[in-house]
Amino acid sequence: MDASRIDRYVGGKWDDEIVPQLVEYIRIPNKSPMFDADWVAHGYMEDAVKLMEAWARAQSIPGMVVEVVRLEGRTPLIFIEIPAAHGGSNDDCVLLYGHLDKQPEMTGWDDDLGPWKPVLRGDKLYGRGGADDGYAIFGSLAAILALQEQQVPHARCVVLIEACEESGSYDLPAYVDHLAERIGQPSLVVCLDSGCGNYDQLWCTTSLRGLAGGNLTVKVLDEGVHSGDASGIVPSSFRLLRQLLSRIEDEKTGRILLEGLFAEIPAERLAQAKRAAEVLDTAIYDKFPMVPGLVPMNDDLTELVLNRTWRPALSVTGVGGIPPLDSAGNVLRPHTAVKLSLRLPPTVDGKRAGELLQAELLRDPPNGAQVTLALEKAATGWNAPAMSPWLEKAIDAASREFYGQPAMYMGEGGSIPFMGMLGEKFPGAQFMITGVLGPHSNAHGPNEFLHIPMGKKVTASVARVIAEHHHASQRGETSGSAVAADSGTRHGDHGCC
Image 1 (cartoon, one colour):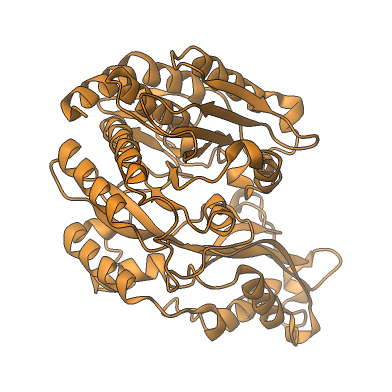
Image 2 (tube, rainbow, N blue to C red):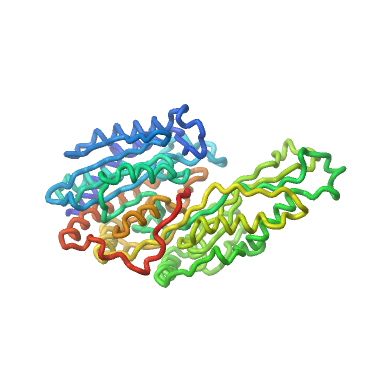
């Protein structure tokens, strides 16, 4: 394989076709079903599917089958099957994954930017969903096209693009079961929905945190009353809610207080965290738009990496029962509600974590208040199986060829439900989990952008790894022998990123 030729082909494909397609994709407000209950009636998901389907069908890949699969009552799924080419094997399979649904708008976008307003500024394409994860279908097919342009052998490839990942991938298990015979037994899974520590080298994800969360409500009154009349007699729902949160989180340090939510960190992951801290240095926290004077939660960089990847952490991501400042009267409010997002270590069982959360928050309600916790998510994370030597060499070679730097490995703080499910269904598969979500790219937040050069290099790297997969298959190195007994939990319920 001529790496420089791959690089040129992929770069041209991105400039001529992929970026213009992503510009149109960003315009579509195809929010995930959790954030748009009327997604069918609105038709935006269908618009995004049609855009990607049309582009895929226009690609010159012999024997390719492009199909939009629709199970009743579920979001659609784009299924693409590409036969082996130039001496590759149809008995082996590479599975490439991405999603096309998006997070909601979020406030705080710069005046000249917006979630559904594509803006090209230098090497960055701003707008919701380009990096998370609209580019995945384009990058996957471009990598295969780059190999076929050189007549490089590759195994049969299957591309799955789902439409409810940001809602927890609840439809995906049904599709994987429905398509099981057509998918076969992949020995390599490529996921393009993850992050990168910098834009200077190829980053692969070794673990993903799980997630437990839902809506915690504390109710003290049936209706609001005059605060001057009731305060001092009726307990404040906000104060009682603070008490409850202090049961699960130390308000001074942020440390989670439920010991059942912690897990032993494997030695290999500790070493990877230390190496990542050395390479990234202060970029570990500099990438976040922190206000002047704010300091991170620890001055040990390795500990910050581990906090983000292998330790539980609580965020309050929404509030209910509280009026905005400009319409807040002198009223003691009847209730306060918050949406809890509790990130879990990769090997902690999500269902059990949800049960622990409920037990702690619902016991002995303070002052006899009405306390409810409606769990929305209970997702187990994922810890990658031991990496085969062929894959480790291929990933590092790709990074050196297209970035001029060695590859890096690090866990991610978010969740990708598909990984746990695939790890369970295909225990012999190897995983290349990578992505373009690097410093300041701000997925899910305002001013989200896709770093276009990173997208090109990730695409070229995937082509390199798929080519090496063929050679490893010829040598009998992709038959599942690399599954390690100590590789950690590779299963999970389904939660969202």
